[in-house]
Length: 67
Image (tube, rainbow, N blue to C red):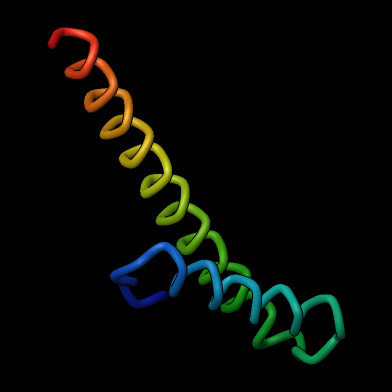
């Protein structure tokens, strides 16, 4: 299972590393399943981080309109 990442860039970099290993056939079958599972968790983390950031930005912009 993937460890919880503290930042989007850290998670994204780990995801890029996994993708590189998959694309270059650097994983055997046993490692592949575990890495795909880890990648899915990292994608979910990054997606949530992006949605949170979008919500924060929309709130900030809305607050500016109200001033």
